[in-house]
Length: 302
Ligand code: C5P
Image (tube, rainbow, N blue to C red; front, side):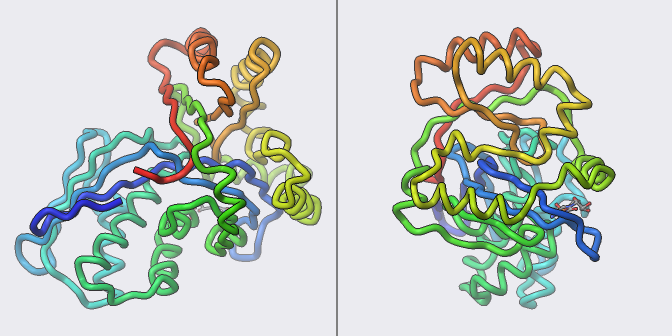
């Protein structure tokens, strides 16, 4: 995961996909409870972190010009949270090599923030244990804590409660090939949660979801039959090109697919790499040649 050259660290900051994302209801704090089986993928950004400059300074650059570089960037917020939490304030030079599309349901910003925390904790010689890092990460975003762990896991609560999977269960996912695609539509996460909150019947039943997850863990339910995302309903009602495309892929190629997070990225399980080409043709036909399309594997062995 890490290459250390002199005082510069280069870390992989993976994207994620949600294999199951069940939003089960709204909480009193305004957030939603969810149950999600989520996994990093072997595709993502790279973060270079070097100690340099005056104490308390941050020089932050990004390969992608549309990424904000100021206080609204989660990398900068992660640095500030780490400094507040530890008092460690050496000057930093950080460069983000961006590959993960934004507003995509792939967790790019959250992954960058968690990776920043991991880098700083290493540079500062580990002042924080995993529990304290996880608490800091949760203040930056609901999806941040999961990226402190580089393995498939189950998230509950608003996303901050992490359950690790036994090695044989996570091993059954790692290495599985998927194709991720995203049309040039950005979907706002608060908007997607807001639509669910306006339609309580769209919430998933938490007992039924836990039972399905348990069946999958025991090997009684296949991954393709576990795939579910509560956000598909509101997003597909607004963007009707998605259900049309999903039906076509299912009927013409017999593949299983799902939207990730609150969209607009979707992914397709690829049991046979030969399906990659016909899939890409159909996806580009539905959206355009400029659609983001990437084949990668589940896991974080980069
Ligand atoms: O935590 P994060 O910054 O990713 O959340 C963005 C927004 O998504 C929140 O302000 C909230 O509206 C919604 N959200 C939610 N329940 C969650 C996670 C996010 O309602 N579990």
